[in-house]
Each structure stands twice: as structure tokens, then as C-alpha cells.
Length: 305
Image 1 (cartoon, rainbow, N blue to C red):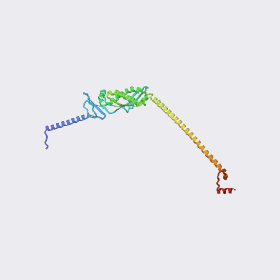
Image 2: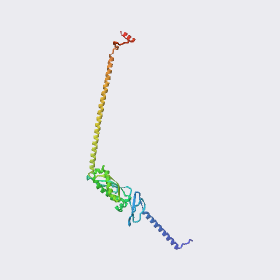
Image 3: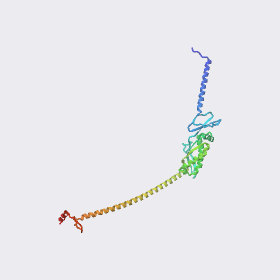
Image 4: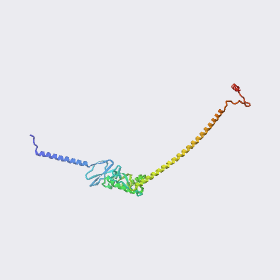
């Protein structure tokens, strides 16, 4: 028979185990809760912690794993170059809708442009950015404040140019003026604008017909220039051809004249040969001239007699 344990000891062990299990559970829950409060500050960002009771902590945290306590919130700011894109394409840009920047040019043409703003928040400007935008996350700052500043800059700079300048050769110049204007507005708020690019346009109203007319005019002008160049090339070709033909005729005439003299001399020699009767001319001596007659010559003269 097994020995039975006293009831007091059994109850004591049960209570100990119960308390141990509760303690382990509390520690596990506390550990999970503490782990859940760990947040990453990724590379290219810095962070600040806002405490609901004490306000903003005066410390900027670099990329790391950071424990954020209860009633605290971590706000991230990009120190790397960040792109805020405002596009008329609803599937591209800051929001899932058409949010291009409308620009009115000096010729009263209203056109919507896609615009890209490249910016960052330097570590020394983080507190200035927080004071300007409060607890707004950086994504909301892009959608609201930077877009509003871009729209104001467009209204200020766009009226200095015609619409075809905005879409054409002066686009880079206009983009630089946008950057300067954005920097003037956003730098006091902790936002450093590095670049601003004026991208494609979405013509409105009768601008399409104006563009078509301008393209047709440019095409006709280009064709006229090409035709003028072709005519000049043909003129120069005709002059060169005429000069070459003249030189060829002169050369041919000279060659023919020389050839004719040679032929005439040959014909005269041929006539002389045909007219010869086979007799040699008589030997006649001049006064004081010595004539030598060989035996062969005497024999020939005798034969003729």
C-alpha cells in the first residue's frame, strides 16, 4: 500500500505551482509586451520620441533598434533623399488619385504638370520640422504641405513663361526656379529641397489644337529648310557638272586636232610611196663636191642602160 501525503503539504505544493505558473505567465506577457514596444529606425532615417505627458524628447536617435515606452510615439524623418511625386496618373504618385500641379502660364493657358520634388530632413533640422508639422508623419507632410508649397511656387513662377516654354526648351530653367522658391518656403520648416523636376504635361482645353498647329508649322518650316538645302546642292552640282563637261570638250578637241595632223602626215607619206616609180634620183654633183661611185652603183647604172 502507498503512503498517503498529508493534505496540508499537498495544498502547499499546489499553491506554489499555481503561483509559479502565474509568475511565468506574467513574465512572458511582460516580455512580449516589451518586445512589441521595440521599433526600428531604418538606415537613412532619424527619429524623435514624443511623450504624451512630457512632450518632445530633446534627442535625435540614429538608425537602431529602439524601445518606445508606453504613451510614447516614435516619429521618423528621412535624412536620405526622398521623392515626393505629384502625378496626374491615378496609379502613380503620392495619392491614389490624379494630383498633378496646375500651372497658369503668361499666355493664360492652364496646364496640369507632373512634378517631382526631391527633399530630405537634415538631423540638425529635425526639431524645426517637428515644430512646424507637429505629429504629422512624413507621408502626410508630402501629401499636404510640400504639395501646397509646390502649388504656390507654380503660381508664382509659371506666370513668367509661356506654356510652350514650360513644356519645351526652358523646362530646366523653370524647374530650377521652382526649387529656389520651394527652398525659400520650406527651409524655415526644416525641409531641405535638393531638386525639383517639371515632368510631362496634360494639356487642357484648346491647348491640344495649339500644340498641333505649332507642330505643323514647325514641320512645314523644317520641310522648307530642307527643300532650300536640296536646291542649293542641286545648283552646286549643276555648276560642277557644267565645268567638268567644258573641260572634257576642250580636252577632246585638243586631242582630235593632234590626231588629225598625224593622220594627214601619214596620208601624204602613203601618197608619196604610191607615186614612186622605183627609180632613184640621178646623182648630181655640186661644184667642189666629191662624188664616190661604188662598183655596185656602176653596175646598176649599166643595167639600166
